Length: 314
Image 1 (spheres, rainbow, N blue to C red):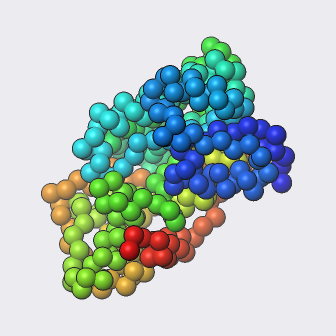
Image 2: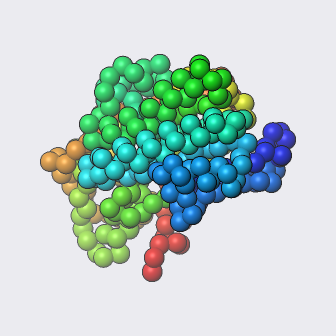
Image 3: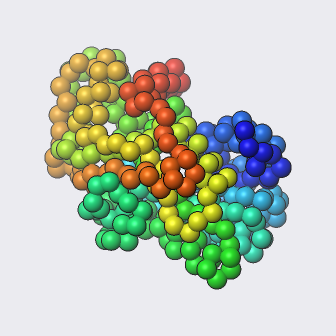
């Protein structure tokens, strides 16, 4: 085990969240003794005065910026302005203040939503500028993509070590299961469990079911982020993914099977599918810092369903 993190003071924005919990746990396993998580009740990172105060109070060597305002297709359609502004302001201000405070490294976490709507499969990092993102999540995706522009500009002008990582859709224990803002896997798990327990013989899902997605277990994504933090110091974006895709209709069948839902699945084609396909080229992460996702998708789904059944509100 490397001693890279042992004497580093590491701030993890969003460290109390879904992915953040796995990153914090990974840092502890690596022997990091100074892990600092700015709570939203203490620091509103959309506001520059709070960003300045956070840097002054915590004096980090490294910042891993996970905090984000996120949601599924419905939430993105309802709050495009909020998602754009808050994600942009958090990232831009955290990077700029980090530079002024001479921190050693800034790790910016982007999003697969930054890719163009019709990116060739698998998505290669060099294709990220080849078109406009899928419309339902473009404001969020573009706000995050500006952190890549800023990272590269600051490296060029100031020699600031900021890297940009692009994780694909996450899932796993501790995910957000609130139907107003959850992503597809937790939304489907809750829908199937609720239907089974209520004796309903059908569920309704958005879109056609023909769109495909790639998913990475959150613990695997956290490992990729920490490997990059330790070993990657390049200017180019790097995908963090599992290297496969599955159609939403096939995903839904799996989740129905593992939750015990045996009714009919109806598709509401008046609702959007979102981006037609998503699957990442993950070769750069393997080459640059030896990252490969480890968790079998079916096992990851079963673990996530088990966690939900044991931890949902009673």
